[in-house]
Length: 115
Ligand code: HEM
Image 1 (cartoon, rainbow, N blue to C red):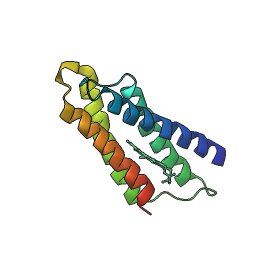
Image 2: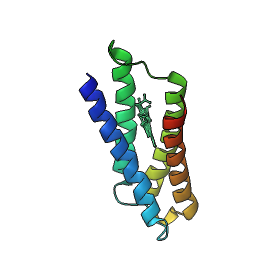
Image 3: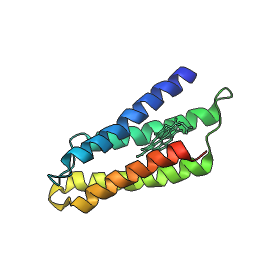
Image 4: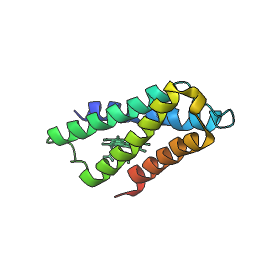
């Protein structure tokens, strides 16, 4: 169970790292990076699976519900922005990319600093 949780955390970190790194690289061209949609969906799905697994297991520490709920809302906003930008590339602005980047950084901060 613990191994599965670690594998999910590994994929979780890769998922949002793709969004974060990609957006920094494409900011100047004002376009979404390739893989941003896959990256954020990976972070979202693995995050939800980790919460489910931890809640269902006796061995794993229960997740902090408030922290996870805040992260979920932030991640859903990022997902909405990325889906919108992927469907309408001509509507992608520096503001949209900045919001994707800023909210992803915010979620890293929440994940690491909220104890
Ligand atoms: C942009 C979206 C997200 C980012 C940037 C992000 C960032 C992170 C980071 C940096 C960690 C490692 C922290 C640590 O292990 O101390 C982490 C772990 C974790 N994340 Fe996320 N996350 C995101 C979305 C989500 C979502 C949507 C959920 C669930 C609804 C979630 C649930 C978790 C869980 C359960 C862990 C395991 C460690 C813990 O209990 O805090 N994450 N996330």
